[in-house]
Image (tube, rainbow, N blue to C red; front, side, top):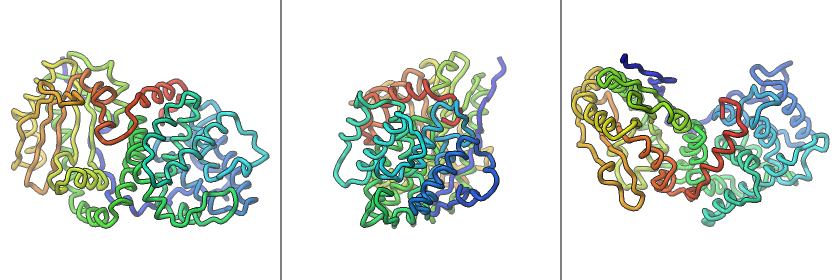
Length: 446
């Protein structure tokens, strides 16, 4: 058998570590005067023009600009498809919510638009989520109750959640700050301090909305929200670490090349078909591919400033001691195949790949075998191998190897990572929402 390597992209470009300075590029308002919006479908253009007219009547131009920025963030985060047609299962519903989500009461919705029952249900849920997000008390139980309330339509709930995610992606944008100062009944809830609101949102961003974006494979949205949240909690440390991490951009890129080389060598040495996915939703769609001659790999690119700082503070360790700046997870068909991969990594595979990118000084930790000795309480199973070096050409990396059954348990079952990361969403919310998403979605963006 000829080994193969399939991937969307192996050599990941590292994300910018400084999410504090988010530009407003692509703002719809800047091109609304043109005859057409390039790359935006006719149904969405029509909705934009209607919303623009409505906000002009309200005297809330800044709110409209904010909503446009949220819409582009949703497209960047693969929450909506700006080329969506009327047949799209979800995107247009989210677009409608985003264009009017800043309105605090349905009394101020445009009379000229006939909104569906789905829209009104999502509108109500979105307002409930917004109220929860901006409060100071511990509201974990309230989120769980809302997401599991059988009276809530699951489609409307998804629309409301995605609207909130897109909104949180733009929380640093100038349009958001300007809109928050709009003084008008029914438009944009008034707050004494926008900074207070941002700080209040940090916890739900991390514990509720980040897991939801992660479930849907919306990695860009996940990382942006996480970095915003960590910045609000630790602004001085975040800015200091952002400057420090800039020095490592070359090493991060080189580490990604190193990971790709490891997989290439593994495919050849073990005569395996290696299928690479860049997020966990894509991984789940590849479960049927895993077999005696095929493994699936989930790539974990550079953790980002927010990820590094959050883990450093949570575990009380220096950032440079964090073992998984980057890494990957190999999902195998059976335990024998799993231990074959572990042996390859430990006995030359990792070292050979490192030398190919100019790194000779490498320390490979002994495998931590949670497969044979599962973690207590969660019963988590996997084999972990950490790799570190003093070379300035590479950052620490973590290799995780586990069988498909172990992966399902770690990703969705009793050992689900959402639980150990402190999220209250560990009661089957993922299965319910993802099943509904599969039923209503045709767009490859979601």
